[in-house]
Length: 78
Figure (cartoon, one colour):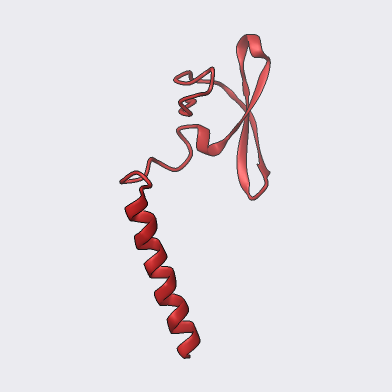
């Protein structure tokens, strides 16, 4: 199923013709009806990773920055 919210076929179930590895990820070539065949990255389908527990926010980025800074400090101490 196409799960990407901005894709014209969002919410549609498409028959997978074949899959390929591309750029370190997986893509699916699907039967797209009047569009012909369509290539979808795995993350645009229900086979991709699920939604994050919480949205990416300024606070979460600041928290991540603090963790990275702490890890860098540990690396320079060793």
